[in-house]
Length: 303
Image (cartoon, rainbow, N blue to C red; front, side, top):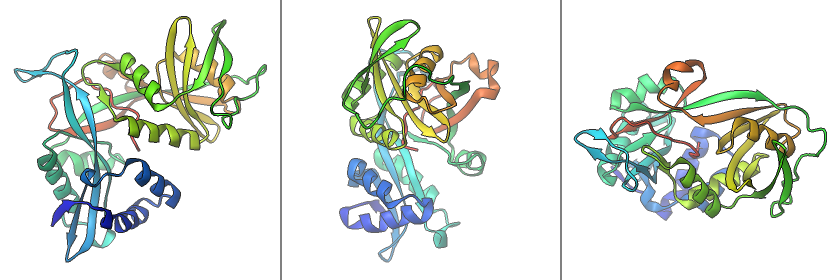
């Protein structure tokens, strides 16, 4: 039987997560504290025993459908559900539980589904046979970070402080970003057909996790504009999840914020022409079910 979760389900849901993904208890607990809502989880059980479950987190995509094709619009949002932590206990795998959860979610929420395959084999081996289509790509490029010779790395422990940095010869103010400002700037920068917007509480959790991973979320103010930069640290690399800065400006900021890093990975929305022009730097990040083809922007997901 498939049904929505309830608070009594949470201990078993956490055990399922722990067994299938091996995440630390602190992360699982933080996620449930920040994001969990009964109505966003479907589970399958038999005789009161949990077999599998998945989060179907709410979001919206900016889209307009007329005559079977997407048209640019200034204001029509379509609800979507983001498939997250889809898991089945090992002893119950191979019986179609994950597929049933996805089909039930589409019927229950009446909204298209968006999923990020955890590994390449799931694209053709699982999602495509269920009717999911490749929909969202990002471009990822590596850059070298020169050593910070004038300023030490920014102290993220002083998270409420602001600092002055030099970018392309101009002074700018860098302030740790809170979810409200981050969402406002993000919307203004990326708002166009195919843009996926997340609830503020999800953005807040993503920012918290980036800070916990040695990076952070920042608002950069200068030259009459506001930009955002969100990154985490992976070894000696600053991985930029999202930014509205140019590569040159982001590099200048990262040298001063993450001076201990030797390089950075820049993540960008791919343009249609980039699909053919830069095939080596493109990464499939999202598949969809129930969406017409769109040049979408899927980023800042809980992965």
